Length: 107
Image 1 (cartoon, rainbow, N blue to C red):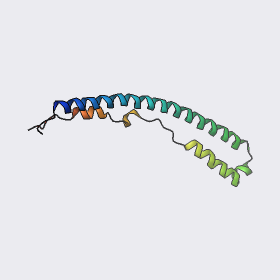
Image 2: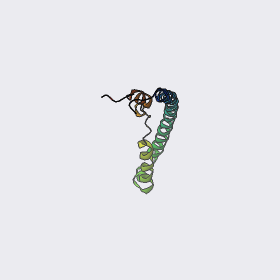
Image 3: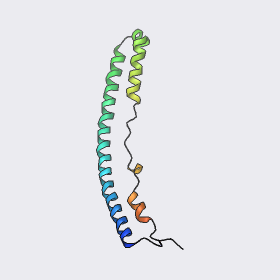
């Protein structure tokens, strides 16, 4: 084979088009997912604040005891959870990569 046939070029274009359409779906899903992540971060922040208020209302003796230490660990876990948005840059544009492949060798 010296070069891609017209049929292969057409198939590549078809696949690239399907990849582009699927990319739009992926982008929409990422937007929706990030919106839910916002809610998750807000929820975690509320739990952290409520738990910290509960902890702060307790006596120093309770805070320094086993229950207080365990409760502080609980707060730290909620406070430290990583719920970062998914970045669009993490998704390659495979359609462009496919379209940019050469149709024939560069002799």
